[in-house]
Length: 380
Image 1 (spheres, one colour):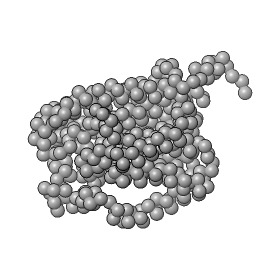
Image 2: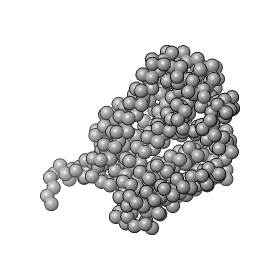
Image 3: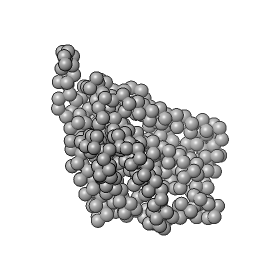
Image 4: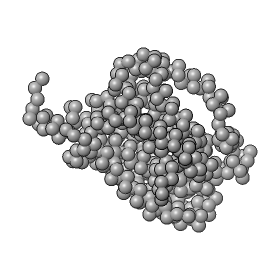
């Protein structure tokens, strides 16, 4: 096999861990979609800050989260993720230890023990566990390769994913734990497992769903019941779903206007700056605004899948599919909740919902996506 001088220059540029030259190969369309979604998110949070119920400067803090997250994303883009992948077992072990620490020493906030308080900072390890699991599974699949078609190796995948899922459920944090399930399924499918292995496992999961329901916390069961019949308790457990649908519907085609959303400004809809941020967007900017945001998300997710399909390296394809699944699950479930199509769970909307830990996870996912096309050029 012959190599040109350019080939060796490219390989030489990728020796080491950090490659600032990767920034020259940034995918500008992906970055433009990210900036558009971030700008819309900041605009909506600026409006949320006008609510009398607002107790924090959402806009200014979120702006800081975005700037910090953008730096993290560009830093990740410059990493050689072959090196990061080799460290995946250590990252996974550290994530499990942090999840155990949360159960032992974590602060309880809003009924959940999910945060480690470190002086003025709060760390939510379950958020970073999402991306850690993606790297761990990518490492595992690229290590075992074709053996994923053998049942023991296939089942071990779900043991690896099941440990953090179980620890996150103990917090309890059903929403975050639920994200890890489709991530695992999508990645094991891309890794080349036998389709009937996966089919039987999904069937077993559906059969076991009623048993899983009995293990939910009481407030989680009430959320499911409120979803099935929100009118049974319209001022209690069904309040958020009912008010969210009213808020979205009141926006009509073009919305009530910027900072003119009465449902959210008067705080009829709780958590309109976090889990129900899409409701605020729809009230103020209507169907047109909501459709625009969904179209931007679709463009970003399709861009990520294109990176996965074009990547000659299996590890890069697995990473792209993993992070796209994380983002897609959050978008699909969050919008479904605000429209009353799914039970209420703590699933924020990327780039729009307020929160530092989740914003950091989102931007780390973007960093991985930006890294994949660079990885592809190394193997072309």
